[in-house]
Structures are given as C-alpha cells and as structure tokens.
Image (cartoon, rainbow, N blue to C red; front, side):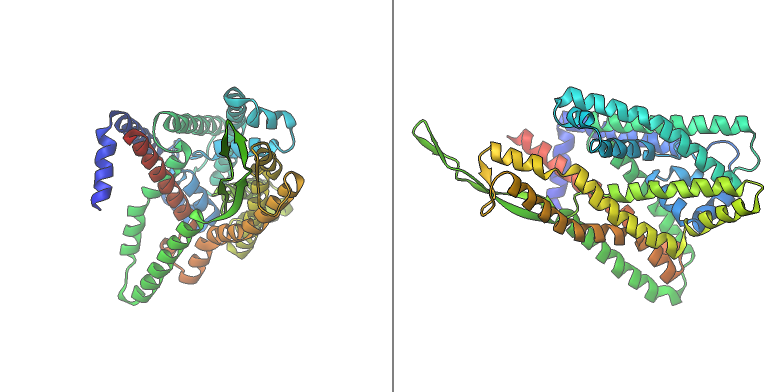
Length: 423
C-alpha cells in the first residue's frame, strides 16, 4: 500500500505526468457530461424496461460507455470507430496496398491508414444510429417522431460518436492510456453505484446464499481473467554466434512471447457488431404491413436479441472471430523472415518456411484456450441471468475483462514512464 501511494505521489510530482493525468481526467469528465444529455422525446421508464428485457441492447450499452442507457447524444459510444478500425485491419488481408501502407510505409503510412478508418466511421455511425433509433421507436421508447425529427436525431448521435472518436484520440496522444478503452472503462465504472443500489433495494435475507455464491463466482471470474490476460507461451529463440572486431557477439538465448489471448476483447466487439444487423433488420420488418415480414421481424428481435439461441450463436461467433482476428494480426511469415534476417532461429527448427509453419501451429494451439475463454466470458452474463433470475446479478464478464485490461495497461504505462524518468 505504501508503494502504491509513493507511485501516486511520484506521478503527480512530475509535471509532465501530472499534466497527462489531469488531461485524461478532464476528457473523461467531458465524456460523462455529454453522456448525461439525452436526445429529445425519450421515455426513460420505457427505455429502462427495454434495456432490462433485451440482453443484446444491455451489452451494447456497455460498449457505448453507458451512453445508450439514457439515449444520450453519445449513445453510439466509440463502437463505430472501433468497428471501422477492425474493418480496416481485416481489409489488409485482401489489399496488398493497405497492408503495405500499415506495415511498410512507416508513420506516414499509418497516418493515411487511420485517416481512411476515420472516414469509414461516419457512414457506420449513420447506419448504426438510424437502425437503433428505428428499433427503439418501434418499441415505444421514442414515441411518435416525424421523419425530420428522426433525421436530426441521427445527425446528433452521429456527431456524438465522431466527438468521442476525436476525444479518444486526444487522450491517446496527450493523456495516459488508450483513449477508446478508457472511455468504455469510464462508462462501466460509473454504473457500479447504481448496480449496488439495485442489489440493495432487492435484498432479502433469503437471498444471502445466492449473494455469497455470486461473490465467489465473481472473484473466480476476476482471477481467471487476470490469469488469462497475462498468460503467454514462450517460444525459445537463439541468436547465432559471430565474430566482429575480434569480439564474439550473438549466442544469446531469449524467447518470443505468444499471448494466449492475443485478440483481447476485439472478437467480442466484432461479434456484437454482427448481431446488430439482425436487430436492425428485425426492427425494420416489424414496422411493415405484411404479416410474414412482421413474423420474421418478431423472430429476429425476440430470439436473436436474447435467450439460448442468442447465447449459442454469440459463443460460436466469438470463437470464429478470435481465430480470424489472430490470423489477421499475427503474421508468422513476417516474424520468421525477421528472425532469419537478424540471425536468430528456433532451436531444432530450420529458418524460413519451417519456422513460419512451426509458429503457425503453435499459435493455432495457443489460440484455442484463449478463444474458448473469450466465448465463455461473452455468454457468462446470459448464463448468470438464467440461473439467478436477477438482472442485477449478471456477472458482466466482458465488462470485467475490459476493466482488467485497461487497468493493467495503464499500470504498465505508468511504471514505464516512472522508470524512464528515474534513469
């Protein structure tokens, strides 16, 4: 504890770190102020009931930084910008030009890459905002709204999403940590008091065993998330010996760390984005005059948005996207080429193609437990809600995963900054 307070004192004693911390705090306060401003015509009681009944929208509220909880002007959160970033990274597999721009053209190429990603964010925010507002209007949250009112609301929430994207980039550049992750983190943390109050309001002495069991499971989930977030598979690396200027160099043994959970929460976010489209289509079909279209729309909204069908599909999608995203971001051929050029090799494995094939096999084996872990974390809230029947006692495994990842990354960055200043 003394060490913790010493580090906090060291952070605020350093003028550069203090300025970065205060900038980050100020930006998050601005985000929370914007999240408290709702768009016009919202029925708060009806909205709370819809979010409680629709597990999909409840999960989407987590990634919006709780902006969806009161249909604020930032109700879309950083979701569109994250989705645009994922799409751009996936397109690097299909476009050699984009791949070269991101990996080979240095800082200038990455700036162009991120600029294209920002431009893609705008149509994604428009589509997502229009679909969500139509869906909520059909469920009586917005009441009767004219086409002009709907158009203006779509523009407002799109502008709010662009504002958060800009704010997140400012935090990343001038603050501490990843801006988008911190915005989601702030939205999760701010909900904790209301969840505690809801649990306390529904408390009865007969529920004590359930609360104890929930606490045990929650701490177990937290420990598992921390363990899996830090777990890695070390691949031994040896540098070849050479003689230069009468000195022998090389011969150093080290290792290449392959993280078990290389994809982080990206597969969950992408699976959530995929589930958004059936919701939007279902909301549109429910508003048509055709009984067949209304039946299909009711099925998509009712079963895809919750229940065991949703949980099973969600589980499988997270598994798929974990492997897919790992394949996109981890390039064994490039790593094998870099090792060969630097005179390094894996003991017992020939450099070049054999090394690439070996790394691909190791990553495939390591990714499996990480993918299963992410899928279980994703569906855990649905399982807990089904077991306990209490909406407040749903363990937000995804939310805990985000909180742990953000806090861990923040602590590592602060320790690195402090160590750099000490030396």
